Image (cartoon, rainbow, N blue to C red; front, side, top):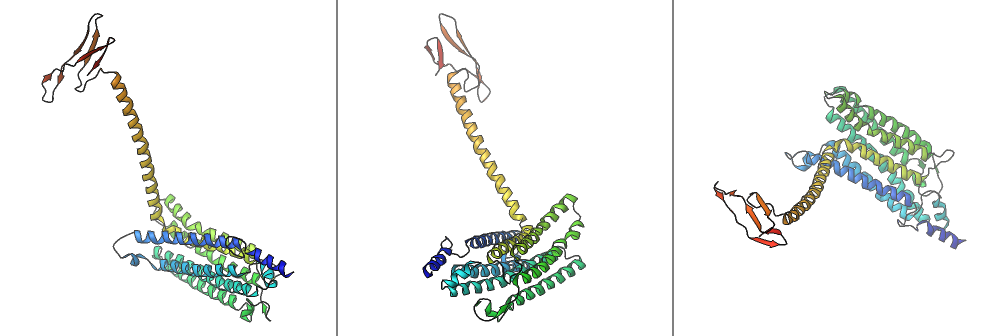
Length: 372
């Protein structure tokens, strides 16, 4: 029995990630790559907008918030990666415990405990970045600025509630990562649904906040709708959060499916990074289209040069067969009187306007003439 359990435990990590949840490892890797890429594009666009100030001074407070969110996300993901290589994740935890890898399961649970707190902090920093960006571009509206400030305060309070609830969900606290010790935990699924519902409500209010100022801009209606569409991309964050709650919730149990939780929190935070950065990536999009046009023009010029070269070679071959033209543009009249072959060349014009006459050598080759 012990050998079978050991084999089953070893099989859990028999994948290229050496992870107890390879699907979660892939999702987190994609999350990190996209997050770093979209934040890097945003910072590049901010720095490339002007050269009057040093590069670091071109970054505003909203950029600082998004960079802090990226740091928080990276730390959390690194800890969770480490935990997945130790053991745990879903229904595999009992197998690892029975096979004698209780310490690995403990490490995994601690990693998820830390990763969960960093996820709350990351989402809050992203929202603060969005709200500060709103205050920057729509700051002329006093009521709008106050509304954004209130939402920032509510977001911070929500984060504190989530972190404290996450820490004190179990009594004692270490019962979360030492489940075999005496203690008890609250209902994690109910806690996540409640806090996720408040989060969805906040995201909805943040999403609709700039609609009125955008529609009041002195711009053509089509332009206003395009700008509004860019800001409404944040609706995908709301959709991903609703899906996350739906797949994570398990009624009649105190725990959540950690594999589904890892997948959907990765989708949720990746979409949050994208929606926070896309409105600021106009410079990159313009440069990308210019680069595409340049490459297309270069490709067309290459095709055109080949076509011109081919036409030139064809003309040269035709000219070598038909010697009826001369370099000075004079008209030539070739005649064959049946008994005597002759060639008459009319006078041309020299560079100084005087008439010149060019008398070519005539070579008889089967009653055909070539000018040499």
